[in-house]
Amino acid sequence: MKTYFFTEAGVVKAVDGVDFQVGKDEAVGLVGESGSGKTVTGLSVLRIVPQPGRILDGTIEFEGEDILAKSEEEMRRVRGAKIAMTFQDPTTSLDPLYTIGNQLVEVIREHRRELSKEEALEQAMKLLETVGIAEPELRVRSYPHELSGGMKQRIAIARALASRPMLLFADEPTTNLDVTVQAQVLELLKGLRENLRMSLVMITHDMGIIAEMTQRVQVLYAGKVAEVAETHSLFRKPNHPYTEALLQAVPRIDQRKNLKVIPGNIPNLIDPPPGCRFHPRCPYAKELCLQKVPPLEATDDGHLAACHFWRELQLTGV
Image 1 (cartoon, rainbow, N blue to C red):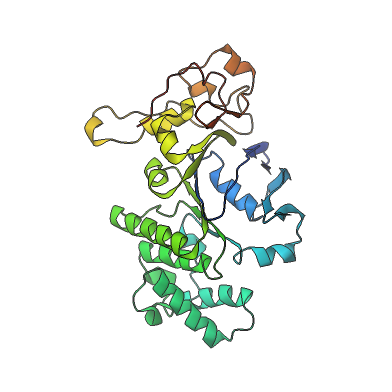
Image 2 (cartoon, one colour):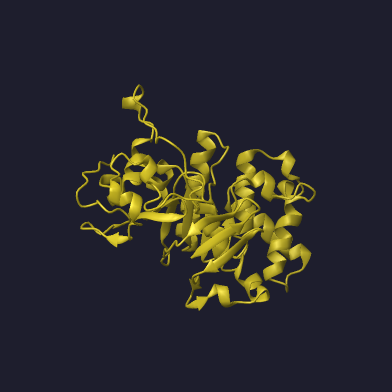
């Protein structure tokens, strides 16, 4: 899949050939720094890429059907009902002018038009109970500004689950939450996935969340796939220098004086570097890395890695 943004400054290649799969009941992580293409990948699957973005190439298959071939009316029956997404900041995704009850009722009745407003409101209160919000009969009359960040995140999750989707994209669901509330939200998502037998795509830059929540992980860098592997295998032995750098940058209690960082920044995706996009920041880069784009190929331990020299490198995990 390729999703580009056509700006006045130039064409931003936000997602430039990303390919991944999610199985039934599977939890998959999309991980990488800000600007790596994680969120745009999720928006592309739901076909809600904001202007001036466009999906230029590829296919998005769900239950054997190409989502890109569907009309907008057909997509309205897919979004929410079959595939849903919780957005990074619930403060901006919840409408400040409407009560929580109104916002949940709207979503419920969109996919279950036979329900009256009263019946949909009952469903909304049950949803709030499901996501662990006390006194739902009071909260449905509340406005977003009256709630804490953790409660708003739970309500955003409740809204996404209103029609029991088969696949949920959770985009940085713990952003701006304190550590205790983060743990509660992650435990909630884990329990909902198991109880509803739902597939989950966890979009995050936090390798700790990846370790706790996913079975398989897809590492993205500058709009391309760097590595794909089962989560436990990736942490034990990464095959791509960028994955190793992400793992080494995780703060550790026993190395407080030696916090490691990845030098440099994500490249400008209007004019990305030639060859491997990670080569300007890679300590192992050679001349070939500057000249040729590395293919995403299978490694000896079952990973997929886009690195010319994965065989020679002795990379370390955690």
